[in-house]
Length: 288
Image (tube, rainbow, N blue to C red; front, side, top):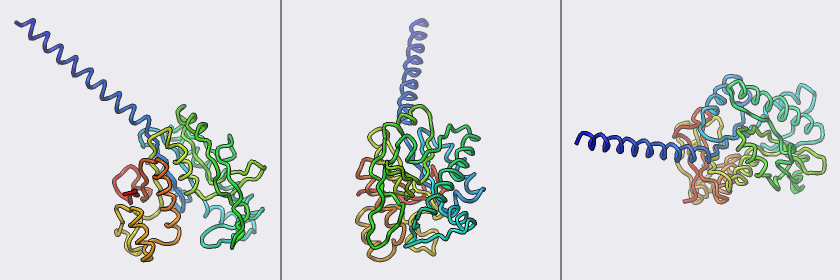
């Protein structure tokens, strides 16, 4: 009887062991297939303290990750120091030949390599890239319509194969907002667009979560009330708020990029404050 009881106990313990092992393996597989793409810009990447806090939070994200950054304020500041006037139309930079030199230096050099160095200090194996490196992201010069934006690129293709190979090898890509046209020209390219197009390209390879981080807590009903965060936005809610003037300016293309990403297979899109990475705050963009 005692032997029989002992056998049953051992058998039960083995079942528990293998069940726990299976659950751990399933959890690990789920985490390893998850890819979080963080897009960050504005003063968050320009100020030492906010950048440090962001990168610490970024380093703690479980699973695979990728960072897309801006850096427009730094480009404007350095252009001024060089005597180059920055021209903006509806919040978008006119990129002539001289300005292109500045944004290439600032985005691909100063901002990108500063972020990479700080991530390496946090034991994150980061690799700084532009769209020209490894032919990752090709664009075409934006056609002249009402405004000639100069050397500004509209994304045509993203090489998901190369990026996914890097990620599978444990590399954390850090993408600067620059692409190329395969004709020898670098092109200034919107960081939100790069994040969205990269997320769409990688959706067949990973369970992709796309997170747009900025200074606000999320998409706000009242821009003067920091706590008026809209918890969820569907295409119908988006259309209503745009018609009412609640959602306007740069938030419109950001949300359009978000819906495009979801329609292309991205699992979730969140717009939130940088300090809320990995938490439950912000605005969740959903299709229905």
